[in-house]
Image (cartoon, rainbow, N blue to C red; front, side, top):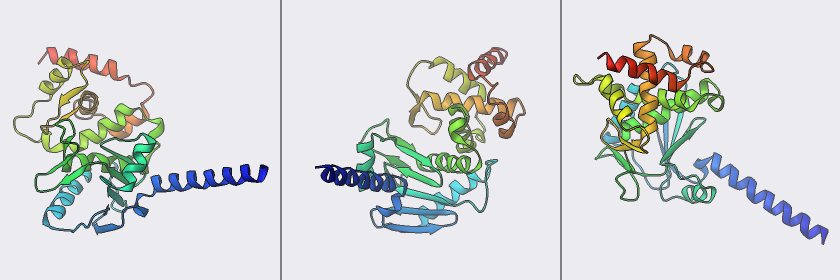
Length: 250
């Protein structure tokens, strides 16, 4: 009896170990791949490095080179896992984020439509994202993971900086007005969804985090390294309240 219990325990332990290994190493479940620059792209379907893919990855690289954490030696693995066994494993785990990152890995649980320049899922208007912005965002998370302990850094800094870098083309538009964005964030405070400046629905908090970072970096003259050094004393609610005072003066 004890031997059966012991074997059952070992079997369960082996299954759990395999499950965790597959979660952390999606390349074992996504056999198709190609490499381009610092990126290796994996999929469960045949994929090709065509002109659209090259242009998209080039555009992502242009953005992430502007990040303070950019390192030319850093490699990034991109997993297009929609419809794969890896997605099934994540459903069991309860992780069904549209996209997420850890270490040097980026996981996309959405369909890639390069000609339209979007990721999409479930024919849902709230599950659409602009390809270059989203991939730049996740690549910055890879950079952050290589640079410092993300676990012990406030989410508003991690997410805000990834949004800040990925929205650089927005800030370069001639009609861009930072204070209008701050006003929009304030008017929709308490709501879950808010339109991204790229035209798609996104979580309100992401634009909130972005304007906090943009204010500190572009209007207060801080660097991301300074923000990280002062993370224990920087209070986002206080920063936003200060921004609203400045907004009234515009």
